[in-house]
Length: 378
Image (tube, rainbow, N blue to C red; front, side):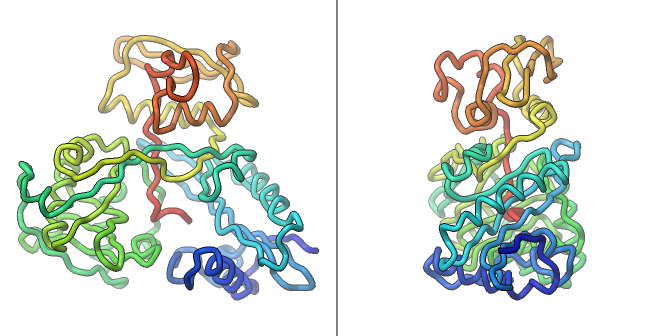
């Protein structure tokens, strides 16, 4: 058995392994080159984000650690996805995946990740510090909802964005970087992010002028990503897209986007809160501070303070007084929380009282608006 970082020469072996394993798992033919175009480049840099186990020269198990520089409210973070975890069925039960996860955890330290994320079975990854958290709102908007909406919108037209349309992609990038939480996207990555999971991007035009964009499923009814030149008009963009498509659409509103969320609650057929993925918080103080700033823009904190400690991290003090607020590391211990409970309380879907007894003291500050675009899964 050999465990090593992959190289350009392993491109085909990795692609074949992932397509084989995930096609069996999902009971449909999977094409990773089409699903995650950003991931595939036949060079050492891109393939070097993966680790693999080889038996007699054959790649039989692999995973990826993908650094994702991210901006939260203007502050830079290093997020990292751990993903595309696969073992050939003939080689399961040999402990290869545990060895690879251990390597991944060391890689997170080496790249100085502040936060890591992944998908998969919750209990499988709990033991590595990952917990389901973050909060997004899944919304359903029908023709009936739109026809009875009080929000004004002009008829919009939508045209497909092609890979070589630099002007449209530059427009999309400009909108993306206005978001409160955004994984950095280089110019050459914009189109690949929009078309991840075989979605199709459209430019929204108002009187022939770019107004926004949507990235949607093949059928058009699932909106994976969207953006507008004016945040105040994002919901109107979605109303216009629903009218143009002529069918019910489903879309997600991140918990920090209260302008769009409030309109969705007023008009949509359904609005349901859920978590986008599993997160492992490494730099707690930095993330809490940034998300406190983000939340305070829409919902000021009431005066108060709270001191608690997180297992294997230490004490944290949250405070708010007369419009000022902050998060700092302290020597004091306060209430002791394990990593998973702290993650659920600070960044989860529910109020702390739903998670622990006497959780009311946390509800002055939590949950905080952590979110993630699934177009940036890798």
